[in-house]
Length: 596
Image (cartoon, rainbow, N blue to C red; front, side, top):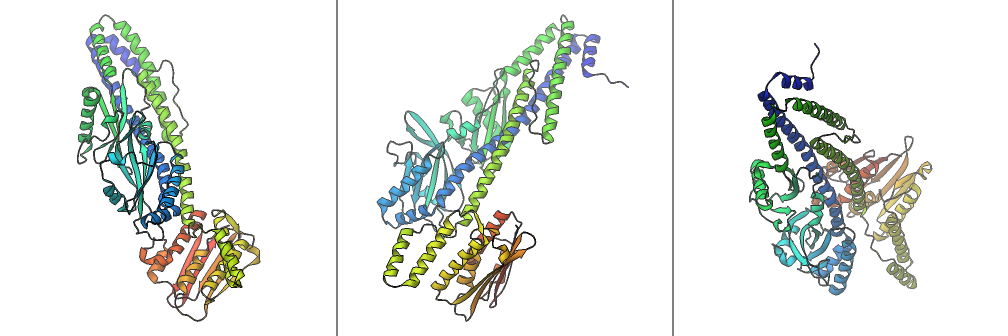
Protein backbone atom coordinates (compact mmCIF):
# COMPACT_ATOMS: atom_id res chain seq x y z
CA UNK A 1 0.00 0.00 0.00
CA UNK A 2 1.29 3.39 -0.95
CA UNK A 3 2.03 5.52 2.09
CA UNK A 4 0.76 9.09 2.35
CA UNK A 5 3.29 11.62 3.48
CA UNK A 6 2.78 13.62 6.66
CA UNK A 7 2.65 16.73 4.54
CA UNK A 8 -0.40 15.51 2.57
CA UNK A 9 -2.13 14.23 5.70
CA UNK A 10 -1.82 17.63 7.33
CA UNK A 11 -3.33 19.35 4.28
CA UNK A 12 -6.20 16.82 4.09
CA UNK A 13 -7.06 17.33 7.73
CA UNK A 14 -7.20 21.07 7.25
CA UNK A 15 -9.45 20.71 4.21
CA UNK A 16 -11.82 18.11 5.70
CA UNK A 17 -12.19 19.51 9.18
CA UNK A 18 -13.22 22.72 10.79
CA UNK A 19 -11.29 25.38 12.59
CA UNK A 20 -11.15 23.46 15.89
CA UNK A 21 -9.11 20.58 14.51
CA UNK A 22 -6.83 23.20 12.94
CA UNK A 23 -6.31 24.75 16.35
CA UNK A 24 -5.70 21.38 17.96
CA UNK A 25 -3.28 20.38 15.25
CA UNK A 26 -1.50 23.72 15.55
CA UNK A 27 -1.16 23.23 19.28
CA UNK A 28 0.13 19.71 18.77
CA UNK A 29 2.66 20.95 16.22
CA UNK A 30 3.72 23.69 18.59
CA UNK A 31 4.33 21.40 21.56
CA UNK A 32 5.88 18.66 19.47
CA UNK A 33 8.29 21.11 17.80
CA UNK A 34 9.12 22.72 21.13
CA UNK A 35 9.79 19.33 22.68
CA UNK A 36 12.00 18.25 19.78
CA UNK A 37 13.94 21.49 19.89
CA UNK A 38 14.33 21.21 23.64
CA UNK A 39 15.64 17.64 23.35
CA UNK A 40 18.03 18.55 20.54
CA UNK A 41 19.13 21.66 22.41
CA UNK A 42 19.72 19.58 25.53
CA UNK A 43 21.81 17.02 23.62
CA UNK A 44 23.88 19.67 21.89
CA UNK A 45 24.27 21.71 25.08
CA UNK A 46 25.42 18.67 27.05
CA UNK A 47 27.89 17.88 24.28
CA UNK A 48 29.09 21.48 24.40
CA UNK A 49 29.46 21.34 28.19
CA UNK A 50 31.47 18.12 28.00
CA UNK A 51 33.67 19.71 25.36
CA UNK A 52 34.02 22.80 27.53
CA UNK A 53 35.10 20.61 30.46
CA UNK A 54 37.63 18.91 28.21
CA UNK A 55 38.97 22.30 27.11
CA UNK A 56 39.26 23.32 30.76
CA UNK A 57 41.28 20.21 31.58
CA UNK A 58 43.57 20.61 28.56
CA UNK A 59 44.17 24.29 29.33
CA UNK A 60 44.83 23.66 33.02
CA UNK A 61 47.19 20.78 32.21
CA UNK A 62 49.57 23.18 30.48
CA UNK A 63 49.73 25.27 33.67
CA UNK A 64 50.09 22.08 35.72
CA UNK A 65 53.09 21.15 33.56
CA UNK A 66 54.65 24.55 34.31
CA UNK A 67 54.04 24.06 38.03
CA UNK A 68 55.57 20.59 37.76
CA UNK A 69 58.74 22.11 36.29
CA UNK A 70 59.02 24.36 39.35
CA UNK A 71 58.36 21.96 42.22
CA UNK A 72 60.62 19.21 40.80
CA UNK A 73 63.46 21.55 39.74
CA UNK A 74 66.75 20.65 41.45
CA UNK A 75 67.76 24.32 41.66
CA UNK A 76 64.50 25.18 43.42
CA UNK A 77 65.06 22.30 45.87
CA UNK A 78 68.59 23.58 46.58
CA UNK A 79 67.46 27.19 47.00
CA UNK A 80 64.65 26.20 49.35
CA UNK A 81 67.08 24.14 51.45
CA UNK A 82 69.37 27.17 51.69
CA UNK A 83 66.47 29.35 52.84
CA UNK A 84 65.32 26.82 55.43
CA UNK A 85 68.88 26.57 56.79
CA UNK A 86 69.35 30.39 56.52
CA UNK A 87 72.33 29.96 54.22
CA UNK A 88 73.14 32.79 51.76
CA UNK A 89 69.57 34.08 52.14
CA UNK A 90 69.86 37.37 50.12
CA UNK A 91 71.63 35.66 47.21
CA UNK A 92 69.27 32.69 47.26
CA UNK A 93 66.16 34.90 47.35
CA UNK A 94 67.48 36.89 44.39
CA UNK A 95 68.22 33.70 42.39
CA UNK A 96 64.78 32.23 43.14
CA UNK A 97 62.95 35.46 42.19
CA UNK A 98 64.84 35.69 38.89
CA UNK A 99 63.81 32.10 38.14
CA UNK A 100 60.15 32.84 38.98
CA UNK A 101 60.20 36.02 36.89
CA UNK A 102 61.37 34.04 33.85
CA UNK A 103 58.49 31.57 34.23
CA UNK A 104 55.73 34.08 35.00
CA UNK A 105 55.82 35.59 31.52
CA UNK A 106 55.83 32.24 29.67
CA UNK A 107 52.03 31.89 29.79
CA UNK A 108 49.07 34.23 29.77
CA UNK A 109 46.86 34.69 32.82
CA UNK A 110 49.62 33.97 35.39
CA UNK A 111 49.49 36.87 37.84
CA UNK A 112 51.74 35.62 40.64
CA UNK A 113 54.09 32.78 41.59
CA UNK A 114 54.67 32.30 45.32
CA UNK A 115 57.04 29.99 47.22
CA UNK A 116 56.42 29.45 50.95
CA UNK A 117 59.26 27.66 52.77
CA UNK A 118 58.97 25.38 55.77
CA UNK A 119 60.75 28.04 57.83
CA UNK A 120 57.95 30.53 57.01
CA UNK A 121 59.71 32.62 54.38
CA UNK A 122 57.66 33.84 51.41
CA UNK A 123 59.29 34.56 48.03
CA UNK A 124 57.00 36.05 45.38
CA UNK A 125 57.11 37.43 41.88
CA UNK A 126 53.83 39.26 41.33
CA UNK A 127 52.40 41.25 38.39
CA UNK A 128 49.74 42.98 40.46
CA UNK A 129 52.03 45.05 42.71
CA UNK A 130 54.29 47.95 41.70
CA UNK A 131 57.31 46.31 43.37
CA UNK A 132 56.68 42.75 42.04
CA UNK A 133 58.24 41.20 45.17
CA UNK A 134 55.19 41.86 47.38
CA UNK A 135 52.38 39.32 47.40
CA UNK A 136 49.16 40.92 46.12
CA UNK A 137 46.55 38.37 47.20
CA UNK A 138 47.69 36.60 50.36
CA UNK A 139 46.50 39.34 52.72
CA UNK A 140 42.98 39.12 51.25
CA UNK A 141 42.77 35.31 51.16
CA UNK A 142 40.37 33.48 53.45
CA UNK A 143 43.09 31.14 54.81
CA UNK A 144 46.11 32.11 56.87
CA UNK A 145 49.51 31.51 55.30
CA UNK A 146 50.40 28.78 57.84
CA UNK A 147 47.13 26.93 57.29
CA UNK A 148 47.58 27.23 53.52
CA UNK A 149 51.09 25.78 53.80
CA UNK A 150 49.93 22.85 55.95
CA UNK A 151 47.08 22.00 53.55
CA UNK A 152 49.28 22.00 50.44
CA UNK A 153 52.28 20.21 52.00
CA UNK A 154 50.13 17.49 53.61
CA UNK A 155 50.28 15.24 50.53
CA UNK A 156 51.78 14.80 47.08
CA UNK A 157 48.66 15.91 45.20
CA UNK A 158 47.89 18.92 43.03
CA UNK A 159 45.73 21.41 44.95
CA UNK A 160 43.37 23.78 43.11
CA UNK A 161 42.33 26.55 45.50
CA UNK A 162 38.93 28.17 44.81
CA UNK A 163 38.61 31.63 43.30
CA UNK A 164 38.59 34.61 45.65
CA UNK A 165 39.11 38.34 45.40
CA UNK A 166 42.83 38.92 45.00
CA UNK A 167 43.54 42.63 44.82
CA UNK A 168 42.73 45.86 43.05
CA UNK A 169 45.44 47.02 40.67
CA UNK A 170 45.44 49.65 37.91
CA UNK A 171 41.76 50.50 38.57
CA UNK A 172 40.67 46.88 38.13
CA UNK A 173 39.57 44.21 40.57
CA UNK A 174 41.40 40.90 40.09
CA UNK A 175 39.90 37.58 41.16
CA UNK A 176 42.40 34.73 41.34
CA UNK A 177 42.33 30.97 41.66
CA UNK A 178 45.45 29.02 42.53
CA UNK A 179 47.21 25.78 41.61
CA UNK A 180 49.62 24.55 44.27
CA UNK A 181 51.95 21.64 45.05
CA UNK A 182 54.64 20.97 47.57
CA UNK A 183 58.28 21.01 46.46
CA UNK A 184 59.58 17.47 45.86
CA UNK A 185 63.16 16.43 46.58
CA UNK A 186 63.63 13.04 44.91
CA UNK A 187 66.45 12.30 47.31
CA UNK A 188 63.99 12.46 50.21
CA UNK A 189 60.38 12.16 49.07
CA UNK A 190 58.97 12.56 52.58
CA UNK A 191 60.76 15.87 53.27
CA UNK A 192 58.61 18.97 53.67
CA UNK A 193 60.64 21.94 52.51
CA UNK A 194 58.32 24.36 50.69
CA UNK A 195 55.18 24.77 48.58
CA UNK A 196 54.73 26.51 45.21
CA UNK A 197 51.52 28.44 44.41
CA UNK A 198 50.65 29.46 40.84
CA UNK A 199 48.01 32.25 40.89
CA UNK A 200 45.85 32.54 37.75
CA UNK A 201 43.42 35.24 36.67
CA UNK A 202 39.78 34.11 36.87
CA UNK A 203 39.29 35.73 33.46
CA UNK A 204 41.15 32.69 32.09
CA UNK A 205 38.21 30.48 33.17
CA UNK A 206 35.62 32.97 31.93
CA UNK A 207 37.20 33.07 28.46
CA UNK A 208 36.78 29.30 28.17
CA UNK A 209 33.26 29.41 29.59
CA UNK A 210 31.97 32.14 27.27
CA UNK A 211 28.88 30.80 25.54
CA UNK A 212 29.18 30.62 21.79
CA UNK A 213 25.49 30.00 21.27
CA UNK A 214 23.92 32.67 19.11
CA UNK A 215 21.63 35.16 20.86
CA UNK A 216 18.49 34.69 18.77
CA UNK A 217 14.89 35.73 19.34
CA UNK A 218 15.91 37.49 22.54
CA UNK A 219 17.36 34.34 24.15
CA UNK A 220 19.91 34.96 26.94
CA UNK A 221 22.49 32.45 28.08
CA UNK A 222 25.77 32.21 29.97
CA UNK A 223 27.98 29.69 31.77
CA UNK A 224 29.61 29.67 35.18
CA UNK A 225 31.55 27.31 37.47
CA UNK A 226 30.60 25.96 40.89
CA UNK A 227 32.97 23.96 43.12
CA UNK A 228 32.02 20.69 44.79
CA UNK A 229 31.75 22.53 48.10
CA UNK A 230 29.07 24.84 46.64
CA UNK A 231 31.14 28.01 46.11
CA UNK A 232 31.06 29.91 42.80
CA UNK A 233 34.46 29.60 41.07
CA UNK A 234 33.82 31.75 37.98
CA UNK A 235 30.90 34.01 37.06
CA UNK A 236 30.11 36.77 34.58
CA UNK A 237 29.38 39.11 37.52
CA UNK A 238 32.66 39.16 39.48
CA UNK A 239 30.90 40.12 42.71
CA UNK A 240 29.18 36.71 42.70
CA UNK A 241 32.52 34.86 42.85
CA UNK A 242 32.98 33.07 46.17
CA UNK A 243 29.24 33.03 46.95
CA UNK A 244 28.31 29.80 48.76
CA UNK A 245 25.18 28.32 47.15
CA UNK A 246 24.93 25.25 49.39
CA UNK A 247 26.94 23.61 52.17
CA UNK A 248 26.81 19.92 51.28
CA UNK A 249 26.37 18.93 47.67
CA UNK A 250 22.67 17.96 47.17
CA UNK A 251 21.32 15.88 44.30
CA UNK A 252 21.14 17.26 40.76
CA UNK A 253 17.48 18.34 40.93
CA UNK A 254 18.01 20.32 44.13
CA UNK A 255 21.15 21.92 42.68
CA UNK A 256 19.26 22.98 39.55
CA UNK A 257 16.56 24.57 41.72
CA UNK A 258 19.30 26.58 43.43
CA UNK A 259 20.73 27.64 40.06
CA UNK A 260 17.29 28.70 38.75
CA UNK A 261 16.72 30.84 41.84
CA UNK A 262 20.17 32.38 41.45
CA UNK A 263 19.43 33.28 37.79
CA UNK A 264 16.11 34.84 38.79
CA UNK A 265 17.63 36.80 41.65
CA UNK A 266 20.89 38.00 40.11
CA UNK A 267 19.95 38.34 36.42
CA UNK A 268 16.18 38.73 36.50
CA UNK A 269 15.51 35.55 34.51
CA UNK A 270 11.94 34.25 34.45
CA UNK A 271 12.03 30.83 36.21
CA UNK A 272 9.18 29.59 33.99
CA UNK A 273 11.24 30.11 30.85
CA UNK A 274 14.71 29.34 32.22
CA UNK A 275 16.58 26.13 31.45
CA UNK A 276 19.54 24.85 33.46
CA UNK A 277 22.06 22.36 32.06
CA UNK A 278 24.96 21.07 34.16
CA UNK A 279 28.05 18.91 33.74
CA UNK A 280 30.11 17.81 36.75
CA UNK A 281 33.82 17.17 36.07
CA UNK A 282 35.08 14.59 38.57
CA UNK A 283 38.75 15.34 37.83
CA UNK A 284 38.44 19.04 38.68
CA UNK A 285 35.55 18.68 41.17
CA UNK A 286 33.88 21.55 39.34
CA UNK A 287 30.37 21.77 37.89
CA UNK A 288 29.78 23.76 34.70
CA UNK A 289 26.36 25.40 34.79
CA UNK A 290 24.70 26.64 31.59
CA UNK A 291 21.77 29.03 32.09
CA UNK A 292 19.49 30.04 29.23
CA UNK A 293 16.24 32.02 29.21
CA UNK A 294 13.94 31.61 26.20
CA UNK A 295 11.05 33.77 27.30
CA UNK A 296 10.98 35.92 24.18
CA UNK A 297 11.02 32.90 21.88
CA UNK A 298 8.45 30.84 23.83
CA UNK A 299 6.12 33.78 24.40
CA UNK A 300 6.26 34.58 20.71
CA UNK A 301 5.24 31.04 19.82
CA UNK A 302 2.35 31.21 22.31
CA UNK A 303 1.05 34.46 20.82
CA UNK A 304 1.34 32.98 17.36
CA UNK A 305 -0.82 30.01 18.38
CA UNK A 306 -3.52 32.35 19.76
CA UNK A 307 -3.60 34.34 16.56
CA UNK A 308 -3.91 31.15 14.51
CA UNK A 309 -6.76 29.94 16.73
CA UNK A 310 -8.71 33.22 16.35
CA UNK A 311 -8.18 33.63 12.61
CA UNK A 312 -8.21 29.96 11.63
CA UNK A 313 -11.74 30.02 10.14
CA UNK A 314 -11.09 33.06 7.95
CA UNK A 315 -7.55 32.12 6.99
CA UNK A 316 -8.02 28.41 6.36
CA UNK A 317 -6.68 28.49 2.82
CA UNK A 318 -3.76 30.68 3.78
CA UNK A 319 -3.00 28.34 6.67
CA UNK A 320 -2.92 25.40 4.27
CA UNK A 321 -0.36 27.16 2.09
CA UNK A 322 1.74 28.17 5.12
CA UNK A 323 1.67 24.65 6.57
CA UNK A 324 2.59 23.21 3.19
CA UNK A 325 5.62 25.46 2.88
CA UNK A 326 6.83 25.39 6.48
CA UNK A 327 6.42 21.63 6.83
CA UNK A 328 8.49 21.13 3.69
CA UNK A 329 11.27 23.41 4.91
CA UNK A 330 11.20 21.90 8.38
CA UNK A 331 11.21 18.36 7.01
CA UNK A 332 14.12 19.07 4.69
CA UNK A 333 16.05 20.82 7.46
CA UNK A 334 15.47 18.04 9.98
CA UNK A 335 16.46 15.42 7.40
CA UNK A 336 19.70 17.27 6.69
CA UNK A 337 20.42 17.63 10.43
CA UNK A 338 19.65 13.97 11.19
CA UNK A 339 21.74 12.82 8.21
CA UNK A 340 24.71 14.85 9.42
CA UNK A 341 24.26 13.50 12.96
CA UNK A 342 24.32 9.93 11.69
CA UNK A 343 27.53 10.57 9.78
CA UNK A 344 29.10 12.14 12.88
CA UNK A 345 27.95 9.16 14.96
CA UNK A 346 29.74 6.90 12.47
CA UNK A 347 32.99 8.82 13.09
CA UNK A 348 33.02 11.42 10.30
CA UNK A 349 34.03 14.61 12.17
CA UNK A 350 34.40 16.57 8.91
CA UNK A 351 30.67 16.48 8.13
CA UNK A 352 28.89 19.87 8.25
CA UNK A 353 25.23 20.90 7.92
CA UNK A 354 24.71 23.32 5.05
CA UNK A 355 22.99 26.50 6.28
CA UNK A 356 20.26 27.39 3.79
CA UNK A 357 18.49 30.71 3.50
CA UNK A 358 15.04 29.15 3.95
CA UNK A 359 16.04 27.00 6.92
CA UNK A 360 13.98 27.79 10.07
CA UNK A 361 15.87 29.90 12.59
CA UNK A 362 15.66 27.22 15.30
CA UNK A 363 17.05 24.50 13.04
CA UNK A 364 19.69 26.96 11.83
CA UNK A 365 20.73 27.51 15.46
CA UNK A 366 20.97 23.75 15.98
CA UNK A 367 22.91 23.36 12.74
CA UNK A 368 25.36 26.09 13.68
CA UNK A 369 25.86 24.62 17.15
CA UNK A 370 26.34 21.16 15.63
CA UNK A 371 28.94 22.50 13.19
CA UNK A 372 30.73 24.46 15.92
CA UNK A 373 30.72 21.49 18.29
CA UNK A 374 32.22 19.14 15.69
CA UNK A 375 34.92 21.71 14.86
CA UNK A 376 35.79 22.11 18.55
CA UNK A 377 35.79 18.35 19.06
CA UNK A 378 38.19 17.84 16.16
CA UNK A 379 40.47 20.65 17.39
CA UNK A 380 40.34 19.29 20.94
CA UNK A 381 41.34 15.80 19.78
CA UNK A 382 44.35 17.30 17.99
CA UNK A 383 45.28 19.33 21.09
CA UNK A 384 44.81 16.29 23.31
CA UNK A 385 47.16 14.30 21.10
CA UNK A 386 49.72 17.10 21.21
CA UNK A 387 49.33 17.41 24.99
CA UNK A 388 49.80 13.64 25.36
CA UNK A 389 53.04 13.82 23.38
CA UNK A 390 54.27 16.70 25.55
CA UNK A 391 53.37 14.72 28.67
CA UNK A 392 55.25 11.71 27.30
CA UNK A 393 58.34 13.84 26.74
CA UNK A 394 58.03 15.28 30.24
CA UNK A 395 57.84 11.75 31.71
CA UNK A 396 60.95 10.74 29.76
CA UNK A 397 62.86 13.77 31.01
CA UNK A 398 61.77 13.10 34.58
CA UNK A 399 62.81 9.44 34.41
CA UNK A 400 66.17 10.37 32.89
CA UNK A 401 67.04 12.63 35.81
CA UNK A 402 69.23 10.00 37.51
CA UNK A 403 72.59 11.73 37.37
CA UNK A 404 72.73 15.23 38.86
CA UNK A 405 73.78 17.50 35.95
CA UNK A 406 74.78 20.42 38.15
CA UNK A 407 78.50 19.77 38.53
CA UNK A 408 80.76 22.66 37.82
CA UNK A 409 83.27 21.79 35.14
CA UNK A 410 85.62 24.63 36.04
CA UNK A 411 85.81 23.36 39.62
CA UNK A 412 86.61 19.85 38.40
CA UNK A 413 89.34 21.25 36.16
CA UNK A 414 90.84 23.19 39.09
CA UNK A 415 90.82 20.07 41.28
CA UNK A 416 92.42 18.12 38.43
CA UNK A 417 95.35 20.55 38.18
CA UNK A 418 95.76 20.53 41.96
CA UNK A 419 96.04 16.73 41.82
CA UNK A 420 98.61 16.92 38.99
CA UNK A 421 100.67 19.47 40.93
CA UNK A 422 100.80 16.99 43.80
CA UNK A 423 101.60 14.04 41.49
CA UNK A 424 98.22 12.47 42.32
CA UNK A 425 97.72 11.05 38.85
CA UNK A 426 95.15 8.45 39.94
CA UNK A 427 93.00 11.26 41.33
CA UNK A 428 93.54 13.26 38.10
CA UNK A 429 92.40 10.29 36.00
CA UNK A 430 89.36 9.83 38.18
CA UNK A 431 88.40 13.51 37.85
CA UNK A 432 88.83 13.45 34.06
CA UNK A 433 86.72 10.29 33.88
CA UNK A 434 84.01 11.89 36.00
CA UNK A 435 83.96 14.99 33.76
CA UNK A 436 83.67 12.77 30.67
CA UNK A 437 80.78 10.83 32.26
CA UNK A 438 78.92 14.04 33.09
CA UNK A 439 79.36 15.58 29.64
CA UNK A 440 78.12 12.38 28.01
CA UNK A 441 75.09 12.16 30.33
CA UNK A 442 74.07 15.82 29.95
CA UNK A 443 74.53 16.22 26.19
CA UNK A 444 71.30 15.29 24.36
CA UNK A 445 70.17 13.06 27.21
CA UNK A 446 66.99 12.13 25.31
CA UNK A 447 68.88 10.96 22.22
CA UNK A 448 70.38 7.74 20.93
CA UNK A 449 74.01 6.66 20.50
CA UNK A 450 75.81 3.66 19.05
CA UNK A 451 76.48 0.59 21.16
CA UNK A 452 80.20 1.40 20.79
CA UNK A 453 79.78 4.86 22.42
CA UNK A 454 77.57 3.49 25.20
CA UNK A 455 80.07 0.72 25.92
CA UNK A 456 82.98 3.20 26.16
CA UNK A 457 80.95 5.31 28.59
CA UNK A 458 80.12 2.23 30.69
CA UNK A 459 83.82 1.34 30.87
CA UNK A 460 84.61 4.81 32.22
CA UNK A 461 81.76 4.53 34.69
CA UNK A 462 83.01 1.12 35.90
CA UNK A 463 86.57 2.48 36.14
CA UNK A 464 85.35 5.30 38.37
CA UNK A 465 83.45 2.86 40.60
CA UNK A 466 86.51 0.58 40.84
CA UNK A 467 88.64 3.56 41.78
CA UNK A 468 86.11 4.59 44.41
CA UNK A 469 85.81 1.07 45.87
CA UNK A 470 89.55 0.37 45.61
CA UNK A 471 89.16 -2.40 43.03
CA UNK A 472 87.01 -4.63 45.26
CA UNK A 473 85.30 -6.06 42.18
CA UNK A 474 86.21 -7.10 38.63
CA UNK A 475 84.18 -6.26 35.52
CA UNK A 476 84.11 -7.81 32.05
CA UNK A 477 82.27 -6.12 29.15
CA UNK A 478 81.95 -8.34 26.06
CA UNK A 479 80.34 -6.91 22.91
CA UNK A 480 79.84 -8.70 19.60
CA UNK A 481 81.54 -6.73 16.78
CA UNK A 482 78.46 -6.91 14.51
CA UNK A 483 76.34 -4.75 16.85
CA UNK A 484 78.85 -1.95 17.50
CA UNK A 485 76.99 0.37 15.11
CA UNK A 486 73.50 -0.39 16.46
CA UNK A 487 71.60 2.52 18.02
CA UNK A 488 70.57 2.47 21.68
CA UNK A 489 69.13 5.09 24.03
CA UNK A 490 71.69 6.68 26.32
CA UNK A 491 72.13 5.64 29.97
CA UNK A 492 69.75 2.66 29.77
CA UNK A 493 72.19 0.16 31.27
CA UNK A 494 73.91 2.32 33.92
CA UNK A 495 71.20 1.80 36.63
CA UNK A 496 71.59 -2.00 36.37
CA UNK A 497 75.40 -1.79 36.75
CA UNK A 498 75.08 0.68 39.60
CA UNK A 499 72.60 -1.57 41.40
CA UNK A 500 75.00 -4.51 41.14
CA UNK A 501 78.05 -2.50 42.27
CA UNK A 502 76.47 -0.48 45.07
CA UNK A 503 73.94 -2.98 46.42
CA UNK A 504 74.86 -6.38 44.96
CA UNK A 505 78.49 -6.21 46.16
CA UNK A 506 77.60 -4.59 49.47
CA UNK A 507 79.70 -5.94 52.34
CA UNK A 508 82.90 -8.02 52.25
CA UNK A 509 83.10 -10.65 49.51
CA UNK A 510 85.94 -12.32 47.69
CA UNK A 511 86.09 -12.35 43.89
CA UNK A 512 83.13 -10.02 43.23
CA UNK A 513 82.61 -10.19 39.45
CA UNK A 514 80.30 -8.21 37.16
CA UNK A 515 79.87 -9.26 33.51
CA UNK A 516 78.10 -7.53 30.64
CA UNK A 517 77.49 -9.46 27.40
CA UNK A 518 75.90 -7.83 24.35
CA UNK A 519 75.05 -9.62 21.13
CA UNK A 520 72.64 -9.69 18.20
CA UNK A 521 69.08 -10.99 18.66
CA UNK A 522 67.08 -11.97 15.61
CA UNK A 523 67.37 -9.72 12.56
CA UNK A 524 67.53 -6.27 14.17
CA UNK A 525 67.38 -6.80 17.94
CA UNK A 526 70.01 -6.71 20.68
CA UNK A 527 70.30 -9.13 23.61
CA UNK A 528 72.04 -7.79 26.73
CA UNK A 529 72.97 -9.94 29.73
CA UNK A 530 74.14 -8.30 32.99
CA UNK A 531 75.21 -10.77 35.69
CA UNK A 532 76.87 -10.48 39.10
CA UNK A 533 77.76 -12.89 41.90
CA UNK A 534 76.56 -10.48 44.60
CA UNK A 535 74.15 -10.92 47.47
CA UNK A 536 71.05 -11.14 45.22
CA UNK A 537 67.55 -9.67 45.48
CA UNK A 538 64.80 -10.69 47.88
CA UNK A 539 61.99 -12.69 46.28
CA UNK A 540 59.19 -10.19 47.00
CA UNK A 541 61.22 -7.32 45.50
CA UNK A 542 62.18 -9.52 42.53
CA UNK A 543 58.50 -10.33 41.86
CA UNK A 544 57.58 -6.64 41.92
CA UNK A 545 60.37 -5.83 39.45
CA UNK A 546 59.33 -8.58 37.02
CA UNK A 547 55.64 -7.64 37.31
CA UNK A 548 56.42 -3.92 36.81
CA UNK A 549 54.85 -2.98 40.11
CA UNK A 550 55.79 0.22 41.95
CA UNK A 551 58.38 -0.36 44.68
CA UNK A 552 57.71 0.82 48.25
CA UNK A 553 59.99 3.23 50.06
CA UNK A 554 61.54 0.23 51.87
CA UNK A 555 62.78 -1.05 48.48
CA UNK A 556 64.60 2.20 47.64
CA UNK A 557 67.83 0.28 46.84
CA UNK A 558 66.21 -0.85 43.58
CA UNK A 559 64.42 2.37 42.53
CA UNK A 560 67.10 2.84 39.83
CA UNK A 561 66.05 -0.44 38.20
CA UNK A 562 62.37 0.57 38.36
CA UNK A 563 63.15 3.90 36.64
CA UNK A 564 65.25 2.18 33.96
CA UNK A 565 62.42 -0.26 33.20
CA UNK A 566 59.95 2.63 32.99
CA UNK A 567 62.23 4.47 30.55
CA UNK A 568 62.52 1.38 28.34
CA UNK A 569 58.74 1.03 28.30
CA UNK A 570 58.35 4.67 27.20
CA UNK A 571 61.11 4.44 24.57
CA UNK A 572 60.08 1.13 22.99
CA UNK A 573 56.30 1.25 23.62
CA UNK A 574 56.26 -2.12 25.40
CA UNK A 575 58.16 -4.00 22.65
CA UNK A 576 61.17 -4.54 24.94
CA UNK A 577 61.63 -7.75 26.97
CA UNK A 578 63.27 -7.78 30.42
CA UNK A 579 63.76 -10.81 32.66
CA UNK A 580 65.40 -10.57 36.09
CA UNK A 581 66.46 -13.72 37.98
CA UNK A 582 68.21 -13.75 41.33
CA UNK A 583 69.04 -15.94 44.29
CA UNK A 584 70.10 -14.66 47.71
CA UNK A 585 73.81 -15.14 48.27
CA UNK A 586 74.42 -16.28 44.68
CA UNK A 587 73.89 -13.22 42.51
CA UNK A 588 71.57 -11.64 39.97
CA UNK A 589 71.15 -11.97 36.19
CA UNK A 590 69.27 -9.48 34.02
CA UNK A 591 68.42 -10.31 30.39
CA UNK A 592 67.28 -7.42 28.21
CA UNK A 593 66.08 -7.75 24.60
CA UNK A 594 65.67 -4.45 22.71
CA UNK A 595 63.95 -4.24 19.29
CA UNK A 596 65.76 -2.70 16.32
